Image (tube, rainbow, N blue to C red; front, side, top):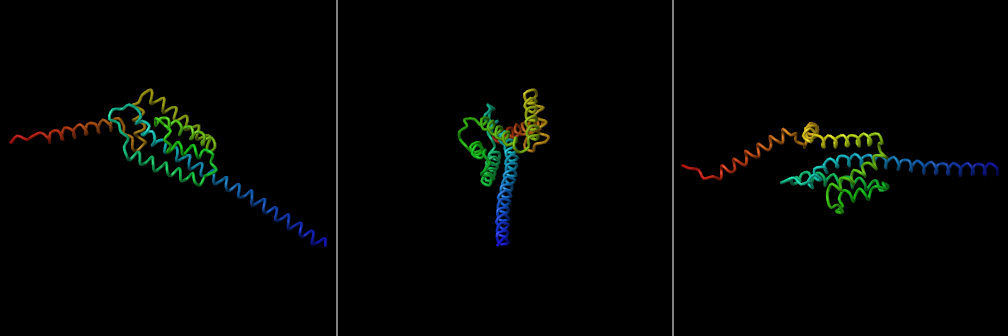
Length: 194
């Protein structure tokens, strides 16, 4: 009888031990998956913030400034990819805030959306990569200082590394080409003398 009780006790302890181990293992795996998704969402938001810069700059009073449709398409596609990633990261407490920031209509100006996006990125950065988040904030601060101090230099430096930003020389060249095109069009419209 003692053997049977000992065997049953050992079996119950083994089953309970396996159940506890399974529970904690699943919890750790879920936490690891959430961390990985948080990292992906963080990186996607960083990239989207760069695209959104061109949209938010459309709120500024530049004459004849319109946001190119390809930039809007790029923003919209990236926003929906982030929302799709959020479906798999339902435990992420910033989820509803991210969705509202990406596609919500509560912002009167796009610079307000950009500020909110920056806050979310900072919040996620504290959980994801605190050192990288700190370095990115410092990079943004230095970039803003440069932009305020010498905007042409800011454009020149960004034009070297970002594919869709024109350097001041490229903008000048494009303006000259546009002026030539305007001259050609007006010249074609004039009646010819024969």
